[in-house]
Length: 177
Image (cartoon, rainbow, N blue to C red):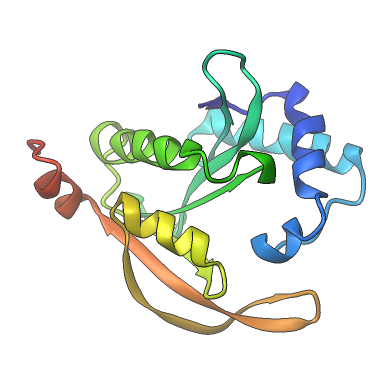
């Protein structure tokens, strides 16, 4: 993983405009490549500030773009930032190869050991069984149902609340505080 760069725009645009990607991710398709460029420039500033962390996921050997992982404080007006949200997406051609499992496991080490985040939360469409399974696999627990939490493509959708607490991560992975 590495911080997103300006030259990632084409890759993000291609991934985000893939048929059905917006529906499974719960966001609006970008309207133009320039909109993605502008978004990346904004996130680069946030990355530098430490307020919002957004990285591209790439193959080690070839540096091929695979997707993204992001993390952000959920109540930025309250410090310290105890609870952070996590989100991710992977281009469809990379699904099923373990790339996101590896990226999330590396991210969890960073979040809980280096950044000292106390709790991570992920909101996932209840219909996105692949993502729910992935989060369970790396240690997130299902904490509840968020009825009609997201509105996309003309309809309200339920989301599962998944979370992982630093205390449990440290205990289960045998790290010292």
